Structure formats: structure tokens, C-alpha cells
Length: 130
Image (cartoon, rainbow, N blue to C red; front, top):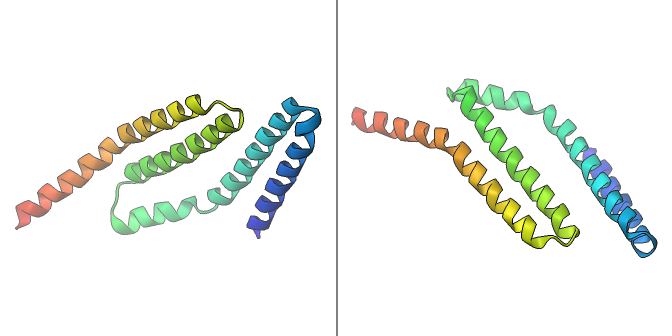
């Protein structure tokens, strides 16, 4: 099971960072970032296998594939911003992390406009049927 690999990598990264923190703090940070990137790569590999499911859902429901792509982008941006903000917090840059999260929310909001337009047009069509 993949979760055991992810947990193992996280624990090894944490222990290595703790051990290095007392002697070489700059290496401890590098180990933390490298471990986080390895975790992300494993997670992307796991997620890649289930991308076809989203296409099947779009086909079955009649949702435009472009809207599904936008939703996946929004989810990806959310995770990437959260991960990056966590690294910034670990580095002691809480203010920059907060600004990054705010900017990520703005980007997600901008990406949501086509979805909002699609929902509004659907509501208008439903109201016209009544």
C-alpha cells in the first residue's frame, strides 16, 4: 500500500531533519524540502493513475471536459500553495506564507469564473423550462 511508503518517507525525513538540525541547520532545511518533494512526486504518481476516472465522470454526466480540467487545476493549486506555505512556515517566513495563501485563493477565484458562468447558464435554462 502506498500510504506506508508515504508515511515511511515522511518519518525518515523528519528524523533526519531533527538529527541534522542541531549540527547543520541549513542541511536540515534542505532535507525537509527534499523529503517533501519526494512525497509530492509519490503522491502525483498515485494520483496520475486515477485521472481517467475524472474523464469518465465528465462523459457520464455531460460536464464539459474543460470544466473538469479547471477543477483539477484548482485542486492542484490549492495543494501546491498549501505545501509551499508549509515550507515557508518551516523556514520562519510566516508573513510570506500568508501572502502566498492569499494569492493562491485569488488565482482559484479567477479560475472559478468559467464554472460560475456554466452554473448560471444552467440555472437560466432550468428557469426557462418552468
